[in-house]
Length: 594
Image 1 (tube, rainbow, N blue to C red):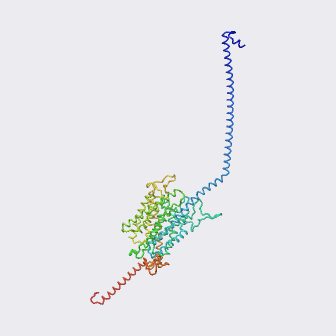
Image 2: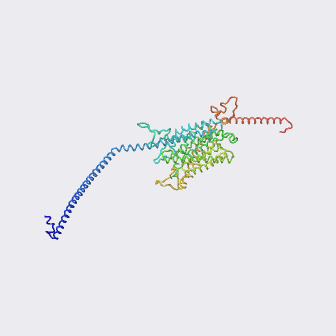
Image 3: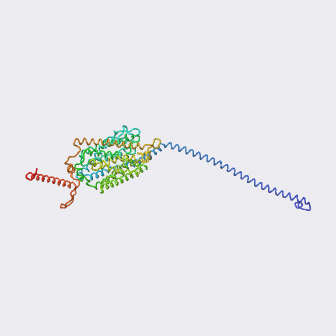
């Protein structure tokens, strides 16, 4: 009975204390058992969670392995697909490359066609300049001669000129075998290839047609022959000049091209080669020295040094227009000689060439204008025009390897070279109606030398030449050193070679024609003018056309000269009659002595 156990009467104090202690122990034991029960449940829960995590980890590892297997399988499948489409892939790459090269070829073709047309337009400038510089009585003949020059020169270039200049054959390094003259592609043969599916105009591996180069170089060829026309104007027979133009374009000029631009012996002379970017020596010096040979062989025009006032230019507007036309065409002549426009580097070089050309022309024109004014104290428009042309010729060789400051100096020195050569011709009484040999010959020599002296390489140690913005390099890519002096020596060799070849052959051609009476017109034709004697209509100008019948018009220069000559003849005749009468009177008078 609990009441008995707890009763203080039935038990003593010790018994009560023991009972309390036992009760507390039982309570603590119960609590401890309860806590142990809850802890065990928590432990079981943690173990369950751990098992679940391990299971998920195993699942993830399994999935990772499966994914890796899938990726590997796909990679293998892709490799197999790539192998299967390899031919198609190569085909696509080839198409992309073909598109790229086709675009480059189109740009180069458009550039050279444009520049070739500009050079061809220079013939209009030559024609106007020469016509205005000569006398009115021969104006029509001069115009005809320029037209015949282009037409006959074209046939000569087609027949053999291109073949001798660029006909090859070439060795593995691209140099002309034999180094002297080409021997293929006469009359344009081989420019088109016939195949089973049609005709190909592009040589294997080329991006432009051979006909493109033919056209561009043709314009240069006929321009060189036209230079001679001015030197022999007003006295050479028209058929004779036509024959010479054919000879020049079909043989004399092409051989010089073969030596230089055609990778002949001058292209590698002294191990450096010559530098003539657009033709100061190849075109202008060849034409200038040939013009000098022709005018010396033919001799001066009748009365040239006895009555110099009768031989002044008869039409300055034509001269000025001709000069502007030539200057304009020169932007095809010089920048076009980059021979392409398919890269940013080539475009930059063409821009530099155009800038150099402009500065040199302007500088030389003003310099000659000032020189002439200092000499005569009068403005000389003709001198200004020839000064501009002198600057253009002077920069033509080095326009692609000199800085613009050098172009200024080249033009300035070229002005003095031209003026000195022009004055020398007058001292020697060499009759060059348009100063063709001073402008193209003397300044052509200076231009070739200037390309060596002013090359924009570092000092005289490096030489750039045909490399443009880059130095001439060794096989390992390093710049060649110590070749500046050698390069200048090569320029002298070019000058000597051109003078000996073109000058000698031209002099021989005109001399043979002269000996056989085929070179020079007769005295009567020269006196009355070739227009009057040989052309229809018999004059280039009709000053009175369209005026009322009762309105007088000013006589042209031919009529003025004829009237002055007639007046002089009448005065001479009257003087002879007076002398005869005086002699007769003296003989009959006794006061007059013998």
